[in-house]
Length: 466
Image 1 (spheres, rainbow, N blue to C red):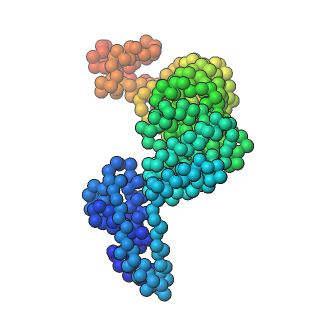
Image 2: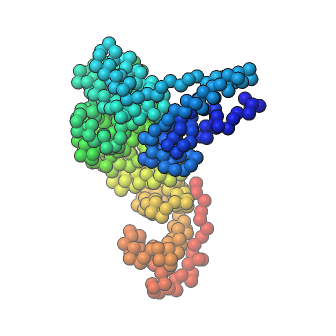
Image 3: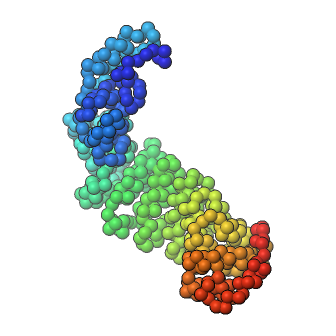
């Protein structure tokens, strides 16, 4: 086809391919239907623009079939058939609301129920326009009602997989989620029930769809609903993480847990469900970056309570896993990992834990972070951990000597001179008297100033770390 000159008005301005179903927009430009619908419905803006004219083009604007142009294209294809050009078929009529309503009506007939669900699923997967019509016709609400009816009867009915797939395909608007939860209080219970059902055909797929739907609902529901979640909710989410699920489903499950973390009672129930242990197990499998960021964020919340820290330390690989992630994944992971170590260091540390931190390289990583390109607050947190347990670690070859602190304190002196650290802030720290004096001599307002003259001779080059 490269050797054939295709009339330019036969090609779509978006795809640059021969149009199969040309439609004209209100701006007067003709596009291939699939291309312009993808442009309109994939755009997050309520009102988008015409790709050619840049004029406003609302997503609900009419797309008028250009039958004349389609016939010309078909005739041209027929004339050039000997050159390998295939004739484009006459496009079928687009889906309309009446067809969707008929399929929804057939759902009430047990003999047609499964067939209707499968047809709706195929329509949803076909294109963005169909998803729009399915949403307008109330398909998400119908699928939720079907799922709730399965829950009430405690029966895994045929079509449950298709119903959850439809809920995944056809996104429910945020404003409708609250209304649906007010009308049907058992939606969360129904999804929780699905996550706990065993022995289903295509169980992993069904549960993946269920947790993806759950993620969307949890992200949009009222905080008062999040405060009333039940222990079984967390038990089922943790269970699917333990037993294995698709990568997309795992990410959704972690999002669900993270959304529930701000409430203390939820954190306690998550710990009781064994979430901390399972998160560490997930990390030991070396997951992708986004999964690690989610697990670290959740672990930080879990370790804010005593039971969470106890469960964290009960896992033999917890400190080692946390240490290995520092400076290897992302700044977000470093942030959460250091704060987890800080919580452990302050509230749950033991001699055994401190020795383990030396053995697995935690102390070394904290020292490396002090030299890395990280925010000052994070370096301060790492320094706080090192200073808190310096008496235990000071005899280790991995632990920095005083010259290392001196080089770091020189940075602090510069901060004082620049006005980034005040004298009051230094006095409020837990440093000993000599260290405070060491920092304060960099302040021009502090007297006597003479010790600064001999400061450079006291500071030795930073030692190499083991």
